[in-house]
Image 1 (cartoon, rainbow, N blue to C red):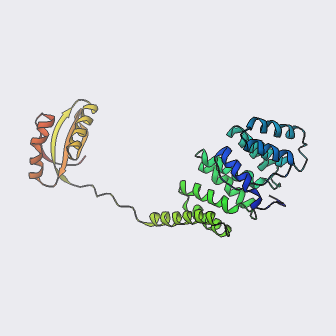
Image 2 (image 1 turned 90 degrees about the vertical axis):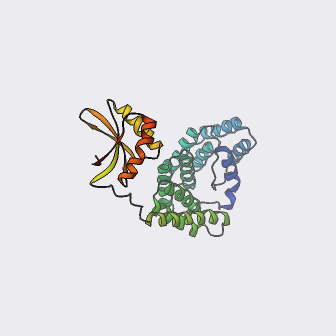
Image 3 (image 1 turned 135 degrees about the vertical axis):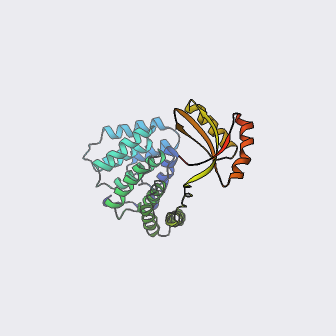
Amino acid sequence: MRGRKVGLEGRQGLATLFLALVGLAGPLSAQSDPRLVSAIQLARDGMGDSARATVGRVLSSTRPTDPVYPEVLYTVAVVASSTQDKRLYLQRVAVEYSQSEWADDALLQLAQLDYAANNAAGTISQIRRLLSDYPLSPLRATAALWGARAAFDTREVPLGCQWADQGFTAAGDQLELRNQLEFQRERCRAMMAADSTPAAQPPARPTGPQWLVQVAALKTREAADNAVATLKRMNYGAFTFRDSGLWKVRAGPFPSKPAAEAAVEPIRRRLSGKPFVTRAPLP
């Protein structure tokens, strides 16, 4: 964006239209060419084909060197019938006309399209470029909001926190935007606190001989896995291991020999066979 001629307030009408057309929110630049204003109005009135025909004629009659050309490309994106076409023309504005007053708008809408497509990495890339290349853009607070959302979604917590703070500062008196950014700042604090809490350590694996119940010695791993699953449904610890060409199934470990002995009869009733208590190290 260079030399923007319109303020943020003048762009809210088109923002509403773009929201209706692509399901994405964000302030956009107001069209100035009467032909493009007409195309926008046609789209607003539900006549998308007529809007695209109108802006198509403007595009074909405008030289790429004409100062209005980026505005035409941007309007083509606004009234496009597919996300693919929207993305194509927005990328042209952002890349080929990066010095125009439409480039930051195009980057923001590309970021929102990426977010809608669950491409958080794409959103982060677009927002990073917008905030870096256009530090005076009136869109920087909105851009920071979308960037923070994407960064938190991918657990890039420091980046999300940075953008949430940056956007909150830039939001000025835009109350709704400030509220949304404050929510992202709260999200930052919660995620930072969660990341600083030590993870619970898994219980130490018992060492040395343990009280176990030898349940079965089976020919196939599948049969052994089925027996293990049955034992776990009975709320016993269970495992299988290969020994002497067979898959042995054991329940446990149990805290004591009496506890292991008490499990023998329920296991026998469920799985039959001849289960017995043994004392051995875990495999």
